[in-house]
Amino acid sequence: LSLLEAMSYGLPCITSDIDSLNEVANSKFSLKIKPNEPTMLADAIKQLRSSDIRKKYSFEAFNEAKKYDMAKAVKKIIKLYEGCIKND
Image (cartoon, rainbow, N blue to C red; front, top):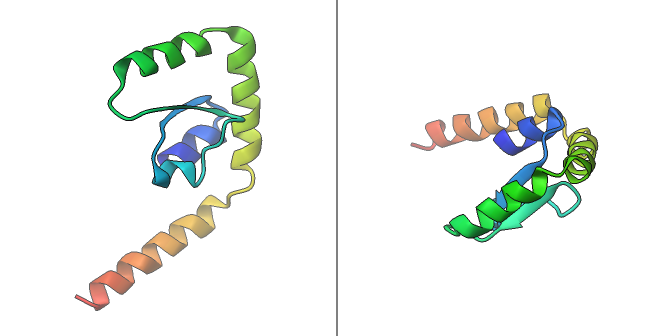
């Protein structure tokens, strides 16, 4: 959810290249880095210092976030948690 929230504010994203983030993040708005690679993180931050790149990624993140309905997502998560509690 935090990735979608950042996208909804038009923030360019730097994400770890892991399955759970790859379901949402793509190269249009997210710089992907390998987990536990501080040099890659530093390089990604440097890339976003460029106004043109930052603006492009911000625009794409905001537009991508529009595809997701946060209210529906939250309801699904609550339903999932409720199901877990009932099965416990």
